[in-house]
Length: 408
Image 1 (cartoon, rainbow, N blue to C red):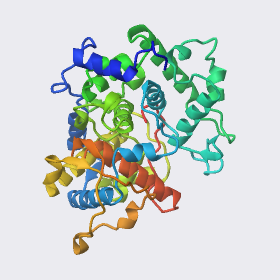
Image 2 (cartoon, rainbow, N blue to C red; image 1 turned 180 degrees about the vertical axis):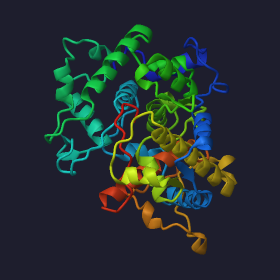
Image 3 (tube, rainbow, N blue to C red; image 1 turned 135 degrees about the vertical axis):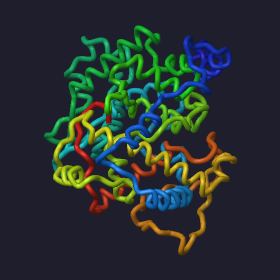
């Protein structure tokens, strides 16, 4: 950065201190309604239920293993594909990543499904998206720049197709929908936010809930809403995971300093319900379970799909509350990157083998995090990593439900 260029982080702090950002909601009053809507669906669900006893067991084991594995926001940046820098370009990358973070599942075998080759490795699922973005930037394609997305002479459909080219014969799912998301987001950002997602953060006054609402209101591709028994239901999976990724990447500081981060819920997708069912927390009616095991598609917005997603949100909330009940100290003290804990012996009722995850590098120092206790974000990240590892190890799990949509 040259001497005459303003430091973007300093500008962010200055704007924040001056209260700049237009119609921002007060962090103490902004609400997404996602959790309230999830509870309503759970209370009225027919085909998805919860097992309170298993929730209590899971809560204790999840908390102990998160401590044992030193699981925290720092874990997010440990993956080789996630950004290591902490600047404005990182915010652009994360926005693009979560703008397109949906529908990677495939019915094909692992060696034939959509995959991206990058840095000598083949990446599938969510990581194929991250790898494709990294590869494009290495090729000097400005794929994280909103003004590029709206320039259809430079950013042609074929260019986007090239960015997401596959190492196999299977193309990336929903390519045209991804192109539409890029185009729409580019138009909105260039028209209303001076071409930068950073201005959305400023307009929300660093409120996580206000930023989720802004995304849903301003971008139709983030408006993850449906109806259940005549009532509007908000899920906001990608809007919420965008805020969570910013918070985790920046360790709750700078562009990730959201003081109401605990208003973010679990991210309703197809992987977390799969893990919650494996733990016995989530229970399905016989028709729904047979449908899922037979790999039959479930339409987006159907009662089955809404019950699966919403009940998973409420389940993770109950797990979080149970952890806080069993360990009240997490509500009054800043969560630090924990030491390895001692085993509780006979009190353990869940097979810890279900939670085996990849070994995390040990840290030489204790890092204080800007949260009080555990939250739904860290629980979601942990469960997602766990189920993916179990799958890679070839363990037998109930299949995830099959819904093809842009919402997750």
